Image (cartoon, rainbow, N blue to C red):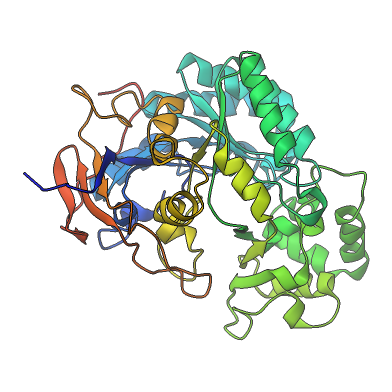
Length: 451
């Protein structure tokens, strides 16, 4: 028995969009999501997943997970298995991808994801995605997509995603909904209108969003996809050649390319912070702070570390609030593992939403906020026994203080413990008591269509 007077008792929060695939294999238990009240994460997003998925699920289950983890199979991962980083699939390549997808669903995948701004997913046509959608439909799977553009090609990218879902007859999750870049600030109205019309037209579509105005990704994604065709060595060779570097810039700045042009036109060099780079003298600086021509600075940055990552401040607060208030949009973190330089969303997405945006900003009432973090996501990914409190549901429960919940983490110091989450239970087992982690790995690797 615990005293919950003055506290909110909710279903355990469900994160529809994480990149925690590697977290079970870290040496220590990782309670960073439990501290936020999150009991279940959907991983394998943006087209990337551990694979072959059956081996991954068995290995993750053996390692143990600190909270529950459900997996999607990644389109990029499937494509790489048959064609590497090449643009064209080999003969029989699509059939092989469909077979691998079927194996992943049989192993327990909850759906498939795409990352169409990343190579090699960027090279896929819509027919390839629809074909995967047909396989997902046979397993009652969901399609979660990082669309082909979240900026100047946003409208076309939304139309493509909706067409895939309508054609295959599957549920659709639009990942990290945003209108990114100054040229499309104000486009949240268009985005939400398309989701609403599609849903009224019979497409089971929802979206998710993290409550921040900056995203985090690799610097190679800033370049047009053709820069990375063929793999990392081919990328570096292109960047070393001045004529090719200039041609890539023309492609990135071509106004006729709404989708498939990379992130370059979304950015202003002052708004880009280098988060991860093998040169410690570069990490923490802005792109503008590197000096010289910004495009050349970007290319030199990538040549110095092709795995470099950055934080990109591209969104407007009015769009963030408009998207957040919409009933079709749930809350998701887009977080990676809690190691190394990081984005504050990894440590504070859900408390920040409840503190900054719900309590202080009154963007939605508390009960609607809880729905956005629980049943809305659970239903979209067919987690039938989670996301609600009643007899027969799994006892994943989060107890928090609405008056104190929040996150003080910043881009400079993201790994701050959230406040206000008092108790968390996984299947009735207390894993957070009086705000402290009780230890151990009490989560489960969830498998679709299995108890």
